[in-house]
Length: 321
Image (cartoon, rainbow, N blue to C red):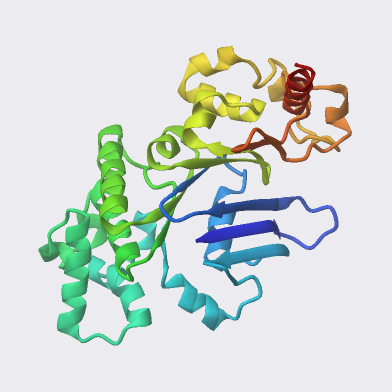
């Protein structure tokens, strides 16, 4: 449904400006939702904006259902966006506080359809019912809704054009724990009933674990690990992934890898691996040689010299046997 082929994005024209996305590649298959995790500044939101044509890459290709949209005109992207729903990170801020929520929900509909007032109200009401809100609430203003209700309204707006792919940027980050669970369960139900495929952008690994079949880990604009979600959470291989998951589950830290005790003091990136200087698995080549995204087994890729050494050693032992 969606493919990034070695996509790079730069914010700034000066030579040596760090890339917000650095040769990022992945694909999203129908009915196999993808999660993207990483710290703030990893490039997650930039990836989401590239996927909807709001930011153009400096190199690489973006394909939607096989159609290359990298250099597409604005009109072509507009047609493509009909099939992509987007739920923004700041749901409250994505609605005009001076207008009823009906106006915000109906914007995608009006972009692609010539609807009369009665048809528009029916369509907005149907979208609200899909997310558990009563159509009579469409005349209220954003400040009259709770945080969970606003999130439901943002999801309703994304569903109005009946997309096949839904991009969710931090869909529950601003919500209380109990409300988060309600929204996550709603998303699971919608995926099943409407046959939606998600790309979930989150700094919370637990959200990705709950919603997606595959996971991509971003660090400083680069993919450092990619694997089926269950596999990655059961045994993270890249030290950065281990550190991320250890914040959620301290037992993960006992499996090896992660941040060194002095890692927080490291500030200057190396010419090699971007995690060098703060990594417990660091090798001599890590400071000088950028690691490639090596295949480890059939289903996962890891950008790590140490993990590649282990994989190569196991391969040699298997050949000898």
